[in-house]
Image 1 (cartoon, one colour):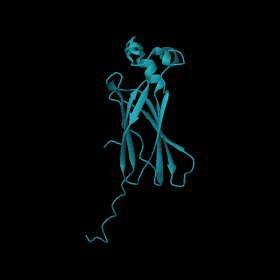
Image 2 (spheres, one colour):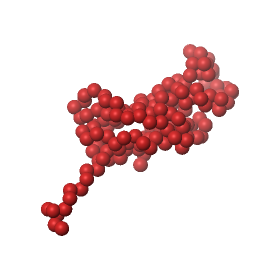
Image 3 (cartoon, rainbow, N blue to C red):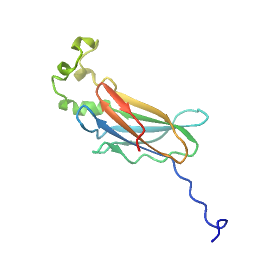
Image 4 (cartoon, one colour):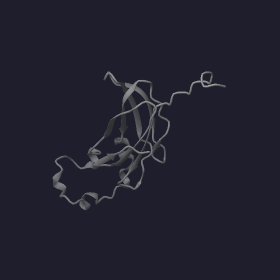
Amino acid sequence: MTAASSPAAAPRRTSVSTHILDTSRGRPAGGVAVQLSVRDGDGGAWIAHGASSTDADGRCKNLPDLPEGTAQVRLRFEVAPYFARTAHHTPDNAEEQQDAPRARDSGPDTRTRGPFFPEVVLTFAVDPGEHYHVPLLLNPYGYSVYRGS
């Protein structure tokens, strides 16, 4: 078979995966709903493209491949329900363990108000044919993300 007659190589799909680690508990964050939206290179409207939730290991493995022409991706993590479920794991004296006085917060106690960030929305650019793994390190008062491998 010559190069001219060989079947064309299938184009590589662009894909996204994520996982969440709850740094306040030192454990994966399971059961967090994740929505995936995409936008093309023309900067058009965001289009919902899929949804899933993290498993017991905090991983979201079954997000769909991205459609051709995708230039930007948005992942939306619904973290408030997760923190509501895991609130009993937070020590009652967590506020006292902070280095700033409790009076620094102008609002009600987080046990009744909920987490400071009820959702986390990440937007990032993608190139065709690449895989993007985006870990989320999460706690009730903050988060950090990076491009993983």
